[in-house]
Length: 395
Image (cartoon, rainbow, N blue to C red):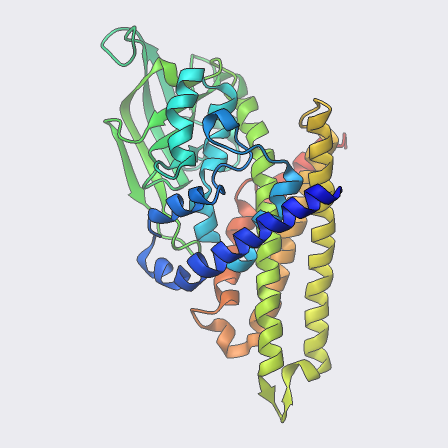
């Protein structure tokens, strides 16, 4: 890693740390209680350039490598201490890439810049009730019709079905939706369609969750929703490959977040162990407690080294014009599992060290303990990650 990249990483991580410590962490409990955070936070993150990281300059973004973004992702988790904030504040990072890569120039310019300015919210809608990780079996349909308005030539799609567990689902202004087009089912029949959030026939139901309490999560209902045909992303039937490619960036982001949350648990547990006294001694003076802290650090260090390696390899592959090679995808799948298992271990150990306080709302470890499972399931469940890694390696 050259000196310039190291300096850029340090500067960006410091900016993110200050933003997280000053504007996120002090408010997280109140936002959890309210079930959402203020939309003004999007604007503030945009002013710092955080929403536009890795997006094209002509659309208002700042191109950024995996290696540059990595410390920022980790710092947001470690110092913001809330998966709910990160999930919704950056839901555009899974909703917008298909638009940037496959939308027409007119659609890209209509949709992307306002989102990167924090004025609009973007979301991704793949999962369906009863569907889970089986993307190829989705049932939401989009039937193309001509005439009757909707586009310059009147062509539009009529969408019917449901999506669930949608991050930013209640407030999203633009929703990238996986739909089944044509007569065929399975992977070959899936397309990606961009749906404006104010389209008639689209309704939303808020979902109650174990964690990520300040992230609005919803089930979306499509009842004869008419979407202009210009909002089709790419070609009909090309959606499955888009979905699969989109997962790689999401999974690296989840791994980085899991690393940051594991560090946040260690930070709180270490501070508590130094301050809390039992039997006349600080907790950290007890060997059993020190060993727990060391076990946490061991897992954090291995996760940090692995994610740095995967990010560096991803940058090299992109520079060479090679994308999503089987070997790299396998590494991402295994990394995502390893990172979330590290988060799970560290959250559990931190709660144990804090004792009764670890069971109280308001502690960092209690919140992260409740958020572990969504990290292990979201973006591809642990079992799916193992199977996909094995197939990528030809096993």
